[in-house]
Image 1: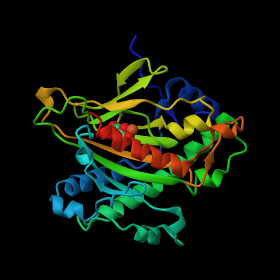
Image 2: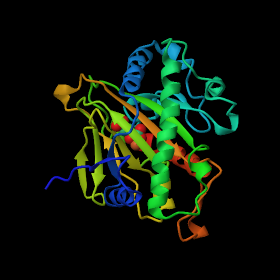
Image 3: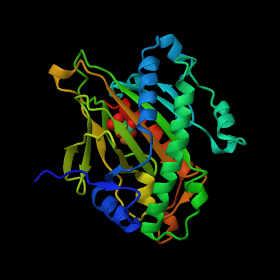
Image 4: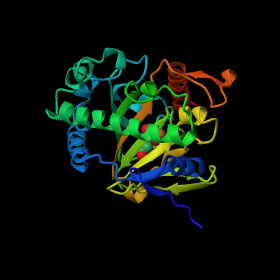
Length: 303
Ligand SMILES: O=C(O)CCC(=O)C(=O)O
Ligand SMILES: [Fe+2]
């Protein structure tokens, strides 16, 4: 029997139900999320214009190459096994937060000058998704019974990235072992994902990693995926969700694919400890992020 990713109404489900679904499947489709579909559409419109810019313009907003990712990243150029995509990533640092969100956006140094409505759309979505991720995290903490949690560090002070991904059309065959996105688990606590239905799409492993299933994310849902840090913090109750983005079949390889992803982490200063308090398993969020980014670079250059 083909297993499907479960779907729930995030406003109605109980914390226990949410945790039980994540424990079993490591990902779940969320409906009734309250994130304006028009906002997502507006972001996708600026997505088209931004990725079509000449390289010299995208280079103006490129990630400088050290520290946590942000800005434009031509991921496929990392190495012979670099994922076949480019992405743009917005990250606002909590220690630079000013009195209001509007001014906070001024601290981001990689806003593209075109398209003109880019910043406006991205900021709106970023702030909305921060709220939403904080809400979801609250339910998960309650479902896990982690009364000891420092809520601010996982909600208001969360460290998050909003990402738009452009998976290229593939006029030529990819290298052996090269994917749109190689099989992986996400680095952080929660991932909220929306992707279009172009061929060569998302596949997730559910049921303890036994079944890889293609996932079409319905127009009215976001896919919630558990990442490494949630896995650690839950003491393995919630597995991290393995997933990948497949290459399109050759006859459909003229199609690019678009996705929008919100990656949520606690504040980088948070020491993640399992519920039993076992300090030998504790991981500093900032170290984990750096370690996993470095690992990604090694994978892109593996022979
Ligand atoms: O674009 C997608 O559907 C998934 C991308 C992904 O897994 C990632 O960037 O971590
Ligand atoms: Fe991922």
